[in-house]
Amino acid sequence: MAGELRHEAAGWVPGVYPIIMLGAPGAGKGTQAREISKALHIPAISTGEMLRQAARHRTPLGLKAQEIMESGGLVPDGLVCSMVEERLGLPDCAGGFILDGFPRTLEQAQFIERFIEEGWHVQPLAINLAVDRESIIKRLTGRRMCPVCGSIYNIYLNPPRLPNHCDLEGTPLMQRDDDRDDVIRERLVHYDHDTKPLLDHYRQAGHLLDIDGSRPPRELTEAILQAIRSV
Ligand code: AMP
Image (cartoon, rainbow, N blue to C red; front, side, top):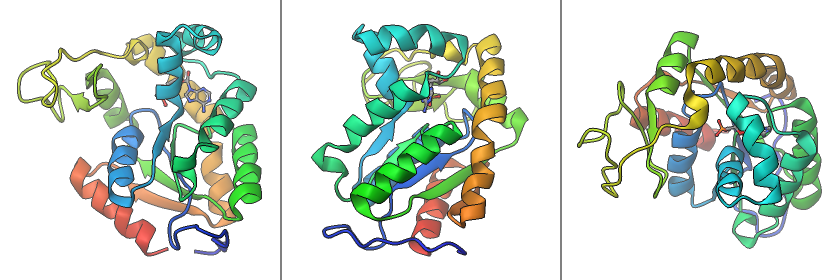
């Protein structure tokens, strides 16, 4: 790895860096962030999940974000950055964390790098889950979620044991409002335009691990953990 990743902060677990999951919508960031979180004992923080929760609770932020999310757009940088700043200030993030769905713009990337550098004196490690466009569309249109525990399934690729019910909770699964065809197209436009350039940003800094995200979920988790441990 060309760039130097430092972990000087007192109390920081050596070898555990703030991890940024990159990749198109549907690349598997959420599923993998949850698995890595369990393996490394650091929290996985999903800005999409935080925004959906805020929308469910009808907070001022949630109400603002809901319409944007339903149209496939990006919530303004200032709102998302303040939300992330507040979350990373909680004690469970002191020893490391995984960001899923953040940063999504260059401005967010610059914000988080400053924030991490000031607070922890480390550089984040970005992991890019590379998946081809055709698979991405299949993953998004087939995705179903448990509204209780957040488990993610796919009716084509990873179906639940009982059709349309969560294996863990037995609850009927739901489809995200933004997993509809027209919204998916808009989300991919934003990904290509706003988020994909971040790959070069982290690649140039030497802080990017490219991982083939087309593998089955368990194999992919192992590959990511191996890549993280070998940095
Ligand atoms: P996700 O669950 O990561 O696919 O995010 C769902 C939606 O939440 C996105 O399509 C955006 O509308 C919004 N969102 C999540 N994270 C961000 C972010 N970092 N910046 C702007 N909007 C975001």
